Length: 73
Image: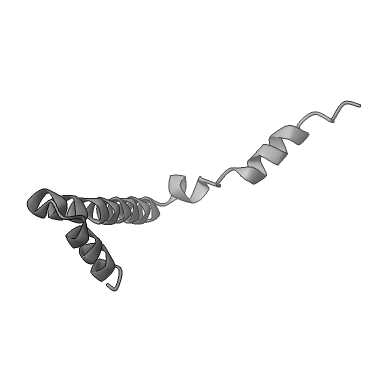
């Protein structure tokens, strides 16, 4: 049984993100880019602070305490 032509392409389009708003709106592109920078900065900070605490103290207890207290922000 063969599938009609074009059907796999339509199914693939439903699985992919519609990028049309990013192409059409400069303001929306800036918003998405700003959100991306913000998320990357937050993730970097989440890793950098415990790493720095460990480098300064060599204490896994201090790293754990910093991680617990930073989860309440």
